Length: 192
Image (cartoon, rainbow, N blue to C red; front, side, top):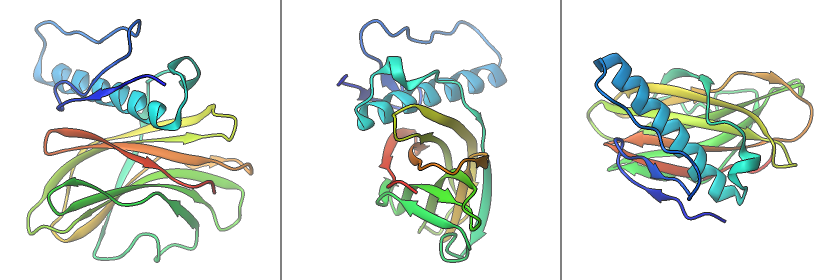
């Protein structure tokens, strides 16, 4: 297993020897934000890959499709859904802000989705970005999605959803978030 060292949002992770690091020269603010997001996704993939005990060679590329944030207010997203959610434990990602990664199976059983739930227990808006990866039992990646930085309302739930994919086989999810300038791996869900 490789040792991955987490850092700040501007230095999300030091990758193992032989894995090229991203570098940047002078660029616009939009390009800089895209580069930080790409580094966060790459760092998150490396952190999650290490947590799963997979080598970077089997983890697949660090590119991620766009995920989508959905605000739930004070409604628990798990208990308000007819789908089956299998989630990892809640991890503190900032003071009074928790996140957990989930693998979701549709009520029909024919499709799956990855998600990162964020619960903000503060009285202020908290900005969070998230990445979720779905994994097949073989260790191959079923998909990676990233939700760009968004405000999670005070005392509320928000969820970063990956794309719904048709799949009857088991999957589990892993994830990472960036909040308060810190990128954190938030663990692995059970299989769903």
